[in-house]
Image (tube, rainbow, N blue to C red; front, side):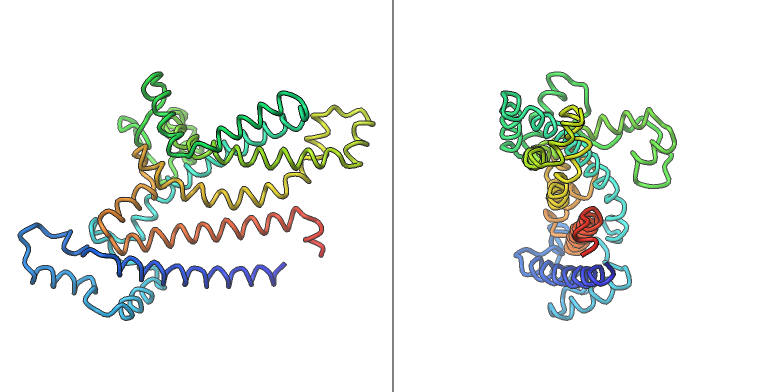
Length: 334
């Protein structure tokens, strides 16, 4: 497996270079002057020219890219124009919040989608399967941001049991060494913090998870229905297994392989969806910061965030490919 892994790693590097070039060019040819937005209305042209030179925006596009790329290879992605802090520090400060939200959404989607798929496959050909199909169709037809609005109305206004904004209540102490609040709260057995964090995360996570759960459910159910007609599934029934046991013990592993690839691809879209959902819930993640960076035309911060998202997408796809190879004997021994 070493050769395909090396090929994928080379492909990852080339993809990141391509993304860096495209993003660098696009955000600089877009109209608007980020330097002028930093200064008060009474600023002179000399003030604008001085700041433009300080951020290197007075050089040619090629020179700017060479300077930026050289610094980026050393881990220096520049300073945010609006926040006046290193981009790498800002990204690393917000990234854990987005990863925790995305992983919680993925867990909910896999659990809900898997449960409904197993139920629908067990009840295939009967009314409950049609109910599962209807549920999947309705769930998938509603985008994540609209789910967010509906959840805010239900559990934030009509029945206010969950928090509708922020990441954690300000009155709780946060003696954390990292920005992974949820994981660290669980490790420290701070169940009060875990409950509060989940109360803030549950609605945005559900908003992201429900459309993905419908996709997982529909594909996995179809895979299970096909596998359940094979000889070894029939033999398991003859041996006295219940239909649920046939599904979970015999059919699920083989039927889940195509779904695994789908989950990896859709997980990247889920992470991308955090941009709007985090803004909707005022969640302090990387997606929310990305919108602020675009509004303020904060060029270094936009570049750092986009490259971070691109790196995440590439790593997720690599992990899914490796997992699929390990779980599929034909690829592993081919």
